[in-house]
Length: 211
Ligand code: URA
Image (cartoon, rainbow, N blue to C red; front, top):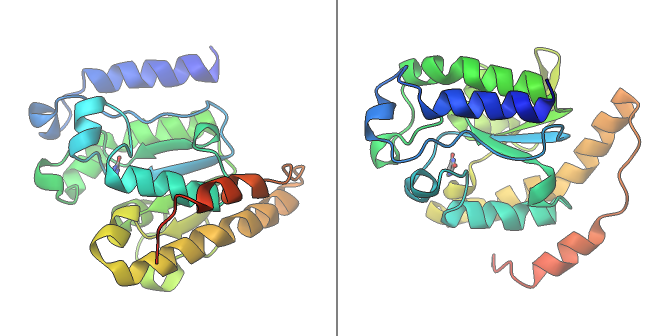
């Protein structure tokens, strides 16, 4: 079975999942999306209002901001895999409960195993806690870590920039560091460096009204 087929099978299981209470209030589950062999996986907390409506991750305001941040990291949204720790929307966008994270855990584990990314970027505390238990986002954001044989780069959730404007510059600075961190990972893994990507940043700078 190809990686695409495996991911489609996982998404299909998620669509009928009733392992936790979140299924009762979901409109659409949000399994995650992206190339089956993406080099980088971005893992957020859980779907919000628009994600629940559309069945796709990061499509609301924080998703638009994430797309801009990706361009600053010289990455196209279409070349990275984007998903969440929990696949159904926690009511009122509250943090997912430990039992919800646990119930959804096997889906995320299988998605990671299938995509087999070089790097996982965590977008939020709950996502960070799953890979680096006990780490504090304020201390580890924007740095390269290792956990369970994988490289992890913890980031603040993009939504924090929308609610705490003081964090915007920090989040942007962390994403701008991403190409250098990926280069470090590729060197350690012995993988070829990607082609220059500065043009993504230039295209995007025009839209990015951060300051
Ligand atoms: N949208 C998502 O899909 N996940 C988040 O964690 C936040 C917004």
